Image (cartoon, rainbow, N blue to C red):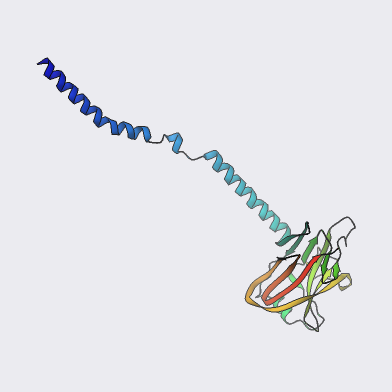
Length: 218
């Protein structure tokens, strides 16, 4: 009788162990709170870097406005320009320019070029160091209506309002290739396009597109 009881108990124990095994396996495989918790330190570092980058970008835009940048022959070029809409008096003034007249940027600071090298526009040189021999070239840029089309005027006074250009400070004038934009630009847009061995300056505004190819002057 004791033998039967013992066998019965062993059978019940084995059954209980089999029933408990899947539960134990689930408990073993379940991730601990520490395993499933987010990497808070890493996330915090990533968020901090993103916030710092956003602050730097805001500061850069406050300082320079819109930017177009490129590296040419290992030297940096940068153009800063204002927010000017195509639906504005500035744009309408551009469209109504007479021959020989130069456009203004009345609603913002003048478009500004900073270059660490002299530039050659089909042999017309915009020299580096116009403000000081040991300082990068700095110019304000102005579209001009000509008898043959358009040109771009480089003025030695760079840090001025867009209505303060002095013709006596004009330094260099280079031709612009003009065409109608495939898609109208809702606001003034300036960019550099990489075209070996040099680059192309592109200005788009409303229905107008202006292009000027250049490279580093020897």
